[in-house]
Length: 340
Image (cartoon, rainbow, N blue to C red; front, top):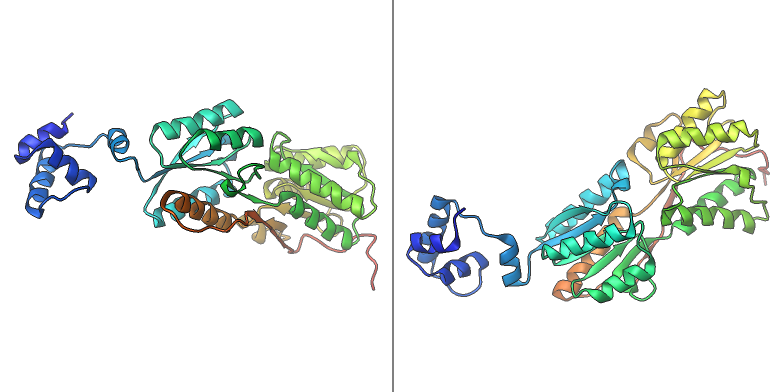
């Protein structure tokens, strides 16, 4: 493997001159730059990026930590593609690292990215607590931005969506359409998002003076298969329900298929709403009503905050985003709807 010293010898210049050419720091004549680049090409030199980053204090790399349970599906695709596009527009590159299955492993992923000399880290946490993330931000000099969780001490370092409020709005919409017996399919309950959405559902029922029926709350695993299994469980208990709110569209799609296979029609017999507004939702028959999170807007805010922390600049203190309820063909009036 060739070295910077060999490049210097080939070009007939000092090692310090080669370093100035590669880092762009300090004056080097155009003629000398040409000699250095020719020498680099001829001997096939590749700079040690980590060593260069340690020397320059800036790498242009931004780390992203996401647990692997999010890797499948449209939501992760949008999260990753939008983050990469926003960072590319700012002249930076993204490095993705798996947060795996525990708070310790998420912490290790952050440390790994900082050891690689990333200028900053974005973390989409699943296991780290709010207190642990506040401590991480205090522990490192590099900016750490938390996505999809609300922090207590360092609110400027987080951007999040109001999952509880979004679930409340969707549940309230079903109630206002005359549905009083509403089943709820949870996501995995080790997920803060799932817990927030369940909380919003319960609060909407309470505010409407409706009973929270534990038999109508079924756990899922964010997959279509788990949505179908949830409907099987609900039907086996002979619970009465005229609507289903599923914590994501994948589970809603599985629920729709299982309802159909069980001889029930959507929406004539059972109305249904999902979350995330994945692209296939609009093309189902019937088209699925869904809660759309402002993923692009949130990522734009995350990147703007990072750039402001790294390069100086302004960012808004507003960090809580609201979702949009998109009503399609999967919801009709319930049995308790009154014509005014």
